[in-house]
Amino acid sequence: MTLTAQQIWPEEFAQRYRAAGHWRGETFGSYLRERAAAHPERVAIVAGDTRWTYAELDARADALARGLLDAGIKPGERVIVHLPNIPEFLSVVFGLFRAGILPLYALPAHRITEIEHFANSGEAVGYVAAERHDGFDYRALARELKTRVASVKNVFIVGNADEFTSFDALEAQGRASNTEPVPPVPSTVAFLQISGGSTGLSKLIPRTHDDYIYTLRESARICGLDGDSVFMGALPIAHNYPMSSPGVLGALYAGSRVVLSPSPSPEAAFPLIERERVTDVSLVPPLLLVWMQAAPGTKADLSSLKVVQVGGAKLMPEVARRVRPTLGVTLQQVFGMAEGLVNYTRLDDPEELIIQTQGRPISEDDEVLVVDDQGNAVPEGEAGYLLTRGPYTIRGYHNNPSANARSFTEDGFYRTGDIVKRTPEGYVVVQGRATDHINRAGEKISAEEIEDHLLAHPQVFDAAVVSIPDEYLGERSCAFIIAQGERPKGAVLKQWIRSRGLAEFKVPDQVVFVDSFSATAALKVSRKELRAALRAQLTAQDDA
Ligand code: OOB
Image 1: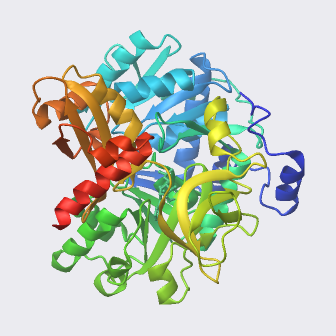
Image 2: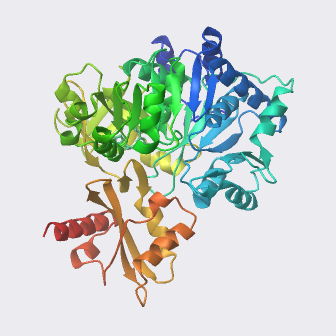
Image 3: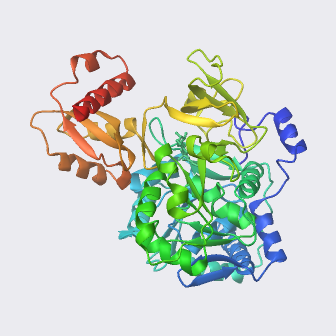
C-alpha cells in the first residue's frame, strides 16, 4: 500500500523536511540492523527471564520477516498486532517492518467488536495474538474474527496455538527459509496506529518510516536516552506514547535496554526497576499517583530512576510539584497524539515550566496555531483550538474522506480537538478539549460509540454518555439513560456493553437514570450541547 494523494505530504514540504535532515531515508529494519552491527552483544530486551541481545532481536526479526512472506502475506498488506508487553511484540513488529508488511496496532484490552472494525477498515490479512493475557483467551477472539472478516487468513499465536500457526513455528520456518525481503521505501507507510476515536469509531493513522523515525531520533535526544539508559515499558506498548515518545522504539533507536513490565502496577514494576536498574519510564497521571503512594513504603530500590514521564492526560500542577520530592526523579510532561505532534518539557527546563506546562513541540518545523471559532489566531496567552502540521503529523486518516474533511483544514493542518494556551516561551498548557470524548486515565472513549451500543439495548430509549471529573482517573464516564418501559439495573447495562465485545475501559463507570433530559438539556440542538448540559447538572449535584 502506498499513501493516497490525500495523505502524502505535498512535495515542497517533503523536500523541506528532507533538506532539514528530519527525514533521512532510514527504515525500522535498517536502524535495528545498524544497532545490531554496532553492539551485537548488548541486551536489547528484558522480560521476565527472557533476555535478548540486539543481535538476537535482529535475527528473530529476519526470521519472522521471511516466515511471514512465506506464509503468503505480501508487502503492503496489513496484520493486526494484538499483543501484551512481551518480547515477541518487538520481534514481530520488526519482522513485519522488514518484510514491508504493515502492523496495525490494537490494545490488549480491545475485544472482538473493535478488532473486527480494525480488520475491516484496515483490510487486514493477518492477526497476531498471545494465547492468553489477563485471563482472556485470544484464540477464541481469533476464531470469531475469522468467521466475521473473510480477509483475515493468517492467525499466529504466541504460546499454545491450537488450530492456528504457532509463533515458534513461524519463526522456525523463517530461519530455514531463503526468502529475501525487499526493503521498504522509507517514505511509504510503515504501520497503522489507531486514533483515540473522539467521534465514533477509531480511525486508522498511517505513519511512514521517515516521519516516525524522525520522532524516535528526536525523542530519544530530548529525553536523554543513550547506550546506558534502561527504559521500562510499563503501559501497554501498543499505545503510541509508550511506543515512541520515546517509548520502546525510541529506546532501541538510541541503543538503550528495554525492560518490559507485564503490568504497570508497583507490585510488578518496582522489583523490575531494582533488578534491571531502570532509568526511564513513562506513565499516565493516575499511575503516577499510585506509584507516588507506593514508593515511600516499598522495599524495592528505585534509586536508579532518573526520569519519569507523564502524559496521555492532563497532569495537575499540584501533583506535578510532588514528583521530585517523592520519587527523586526529573518529571517530564508529554502531550502528544497518535496523529503526530508531540510536546515535551525539556529535562533542564526551570522547575515551574515543568510543573505548569505540557511542554513544547519536538521540532522547529512543527507549525502550531491556536485559533478561535472563526479560525483566527487568538492573542498570545489566550485559550483557543490547537491546530498543527509538520514533519510527523499526518495529512489524513487511512481511507476515510469524511473524517479527513472534518479533521484537517484545507491547507493541511490537523484539528487536534484540544483547547490550549501558549506561554511566551512557546510552551503549551492544555485547557480542555473541543471534541466529545472521555479521557479515562489516558484511554480515549468516544461518547457516540458507547451511546450507539446502549441504544441497541431494548430497555434503553435514549442515552447520553458524558465525562465527569474524577479525582483518580482524571475523568470517568457516566451514561445518562432514559429507559424504555421498566428501568433495567445499571449493572445490566454495564454487562451489556461488555457483551457487545468492547474493551473493559469503555464500560460506563456510572449509570444515571433520568425521566427525560432536563428542559434546558432537551432544548439543546446537538448531542454535544446535551452532553455538556447533563455533565453540568451532575457536577452541580455533586458540589451541592
Ligand atoms: C496520546 O495519544 P492519543 O492519540 O491516545 O491521545 C491524544 C489526546 C490529545 O489530543 C489530548 O487530548 C490528550 O490525548 N493528551 C493530553 C496529554 N497527552 C495527551 N491531554 C493533556 N495533557 C497531556 N499531557 O495520548 C499520546 C501520544 C503520544 C505521546 C503522549 C501521549
